[in-house]
Length: 102
Image 1: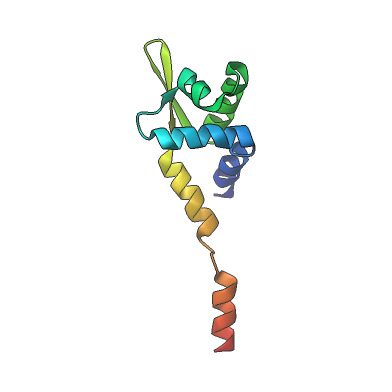
Image 2 (image 1 turned 135 degrees about the vertical axis):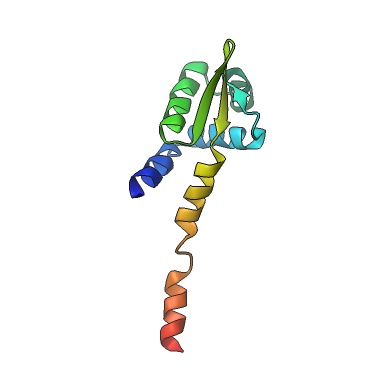
């Protein structure tokens, strides 16, 4: 199970990819074309393609060909799973210590 989470977190491993992912999250389910992402982020098209490939490889973005455009969408379920994974042990040490002290 850690392999999927590791891939997701690794895909977010740059400021530019986080910027792209946040733009897609803000766009919601309709998603954005590559041109729209480029307008919002200012990232050069060739570099943007690389970042989108990394995000898609990490399971954080889906890409759908619609006519001559590619629509990119954030994978909200995967993002929720990553958030849950990282927060699943929130305060476990504090809870354990409190139980031992009580």
